[in-house]
Amino acid sequence: MSRLETVLEKAALRRNPQSASPLPEDRSQGRKQMNRLLETPPLSVTSPYVPTAQSVRNPGVNEEFHKLRSRLIRMTRGDRFRNTLLVTSAVSGEGKSISALNLAISLAQEYDYTVLLVDADLRKPSIHQYLGIDPEVGLVQCLSGEVTLDQALIKTGLGKLVFLPAGGIVENPVELLSSSRMKAIIQEVKERYPERYVVFDSPPMLPFADAQVLSESVDGVLFVVREGCSKIEAVRQSLEVLETGKLLGLVYNDSRNDSTSQQGRYAYY
Image 1 (tube, rainbow, N blue to C red):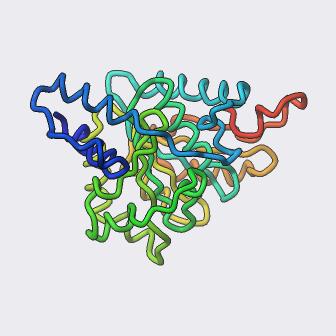
Image 2: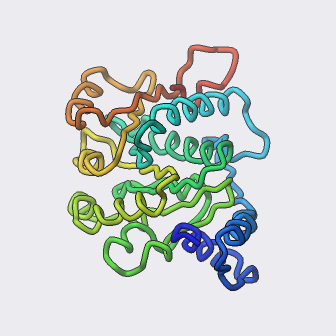
């Protein structure tokens, strides 16, 4: 059994201790066991900003995330699988966290990928709120050495989505995110999830250096711009600081082009 399967089993068992059983040595049996563990009840997500997690879906909105997901897969699964992705924006309020969350859920549900979503916004973490949970530990505690990575992971039951919360707000996020420990964590999840996507949500680029620091350690960046909010000059300044070749594309959010539907309320690509 791979290290990923072991970690996912531990995360699932924390939510459902009664399902505990010895780890099978045979790999095929391990996969069957993992499939059973991944059938844990999904979190009850009621936020209207997470349509991909709703039992009654908005066809227009979900289709836009399907398009984004499909294009992302085509861009990242070439000769080299670029599986660590950062989602950011120029300034706050452009929908980067919502886009990161819905994209991760779409990948985890429709393509049957195991997806790790990391809330690396240590200034204003919000993904746990959209999921309706209140985690006690997360990335901050992993960076400080208080807990291990597998102790902080949360199995959501939303497809094969695993969530690593921020773990709180800190006064020195840049120092933590640029530390050797953070680089080691990114490398660890990249190697642990060699065929899986790892999606990082980060603070916006212009006010802080956090996203720029993180972008240096990931394979690609998705940049969110919001209609009526993003300024061309702010977008240009943000993109100039990204490493050449890291930008995968822009996510055009909150489009109002179709006045007869609400599909533009969330995201376009």
